[in-house]
Amino acid sequence: MAASKVKKLYETLRKKYRLPGFDELDQEFEVSAIEAESGLLREIRKQISEKVGDVSSLFQSVLQPDTNLVDLSESRVFNEAEKQRLFELFKRLMVADRAMAGLSIENDEKLDAAFIKSFHAEWKKLKPELVKFIKRLRDGWEKETEEGEEAGYMG
View 1 (cartoon, one colour):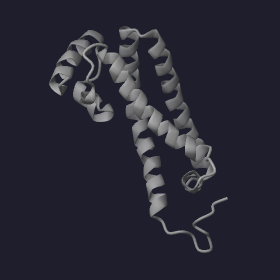
View 2: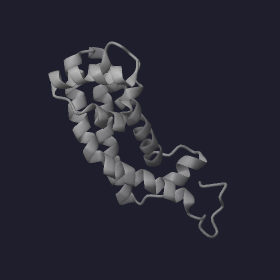
View 3: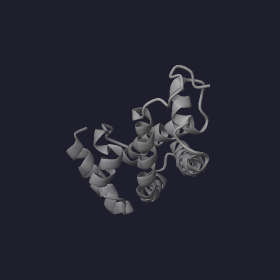
């Protein structure tokens, strides 16, 4: 379905449920990529779920690193206090993730609308810190290896 058709359909739902603007949701969750002609709010929830899943998986790897070079290297970027804050953010993402899992079972447009509205507000609060932590991960890869540290083994 064309983005303009999605936007038009969303506008009707936005008015009905007092949802955030389409462009704002599209900016954050790429909702214009949706092609389904029915269940638009369900599809928007799925787009949100995908982004939340990506970010929470990244943070999980930092908080509980697997024994691979990426996880072990990135886990070392943060001190314990930062990891604690990261865990608090992770918990908030997981609350949303589990709420979306429940909504996928319930399959109720009104509940999806309520979730989208509340999570959008939550996302706006979370996003600056999420961006900050992800930037730190990227910056960690740009730093030179510490003197005496072997790049191939992080255990």
